[in-house]
Figure 1: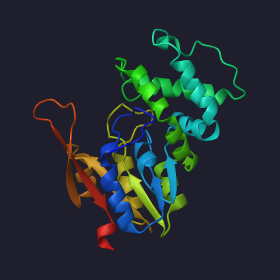
Figure 2: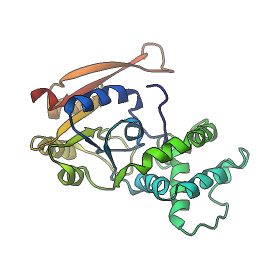
Figure 3: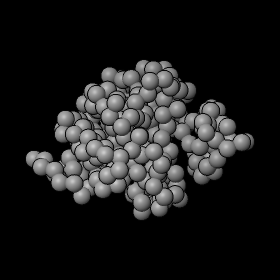
Figure 4: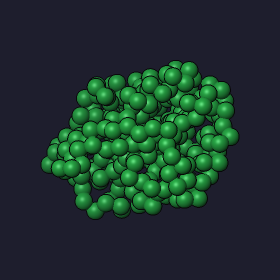
Length: 256
């Protein structure tokens, strides 16, 4: 997708899928877009909808989006403090600031952790992500666009069962990109029991849903059966033989 905007590095980001997600959303005729497992916000930031609800169960992720929405200037200055010097980049967090709200600094620390460790914190990946400083400066270049978009969000910090129940009606479109089962990339795990609960919830909703998985993951097909369709995407910077990624899609739109 051209001219996309990004805020966070996070495992499994679906920014390359946004074009196809947008098509399904438009085809649904719904006005409200609910990003159930919002994560990095890559989909919410680049989707076009009258109403966007960004949701994630991880309060650290949510704190970043709330800081951008509620304190955009202070959070931008926090990024300035963070990138004041590339040589001192690693010492961010020890630099004092005098915010009226500590939440901005806490959100800044969370942002820094996500940016400097592959998809998350050093607790799950010991190797620091290369190019983090350059990545953050790129975020700063697009910050005005990011802040303008996030200002439009309704931001929620709910379990998927709660967020779907709260917004389920005939005007809602739920985009569902669950965490990869069995991976330790996330602060909140997602297991087979959760997957089965998700299946039960989706079988009863009034709204339209679109759900996708990496085709290599076997658990989704065991729980949800065969997908409605599969799409191939170019895998940039991939090893030979891995130039493409395949994503399976599940939706109740085709039945209506």
